Length: 398
Image (cartoon, rainbow, N blue to C red; front, side):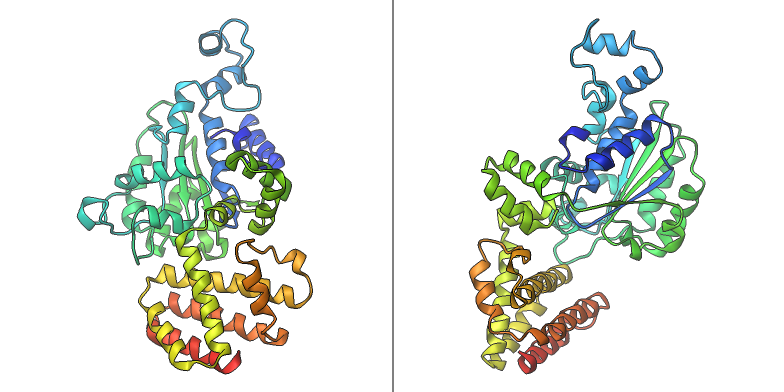
């Protein structure tokens, strides 16, 4: 990944490049974003820039062997503010195969690795590489789906922490930096966090940690306080629209509509355009639930609660998050602000029709119901009780 391939975030990219150029890169950088807004592409572009042998040669005033060997005596394509893409280090980082570039992420048992056993983190690397190549704006749920975790939640545990510490105890294979990328550190349990704490607060020379989170408040304070926090904002609508138009070969007007719906998330825009089956099912289930509640069909609601209880925890939470998103859109429509509801064109008419049947002053109750449901799921409350209670409450309030 190089900086010029990233959608938007020009100012933030310049700040990261400047940290590398001036030697002021912190040893622990925490990139916080809403899912799909570009933290991973920014991290990968920065890491490739750090490793780039051409950049190092130019910075050191040595353009005789690397630079001339790659670009000739008078190169027209000599990079000045980005990675060269052609040196051995750039190629290895781009392929996520550099021996001094390590990455850890939440894992669990899966049929794809050693017949359902939870293997060492590097056994999942091929899956991770394929996912990054296909979509560097992927979500946490996309990662779990790629690993076929089914109904399980990923975790960064003590085994992953020990594996990483063991790798960092060795000298850099190529004699330069050692870089660690940690995805979703909020999934790190306390024992693993304590194991990694010393490596983060007292890193060996030229060892750098990049962490990417969607929930910085869920990272334990001892880890979070030792990182420099960088907020990755949503991508500007115009920049996202241009990127979507280029990727999907669509006209800029259509791309702008999708960009507005995605609210600055490239990953979200790709989901909307692709209209994945899971997301489509969540929307249809929620609309059916609200119709049953409005029609006072309690047996239908209880049957639906039973079906939802059979899903995995992540799928159940995704359903609730989808419901909250649609509820927000309905609420905005009821306030007469449809222009900022950012409606999916494929769902627009259904949402507007349902919004007209709901009272504006009741949306606060609906929000509380679905947020409480998510909290109960995370606390491992029996799913049948949770969704039966949700459907019963909607029956009484819709």
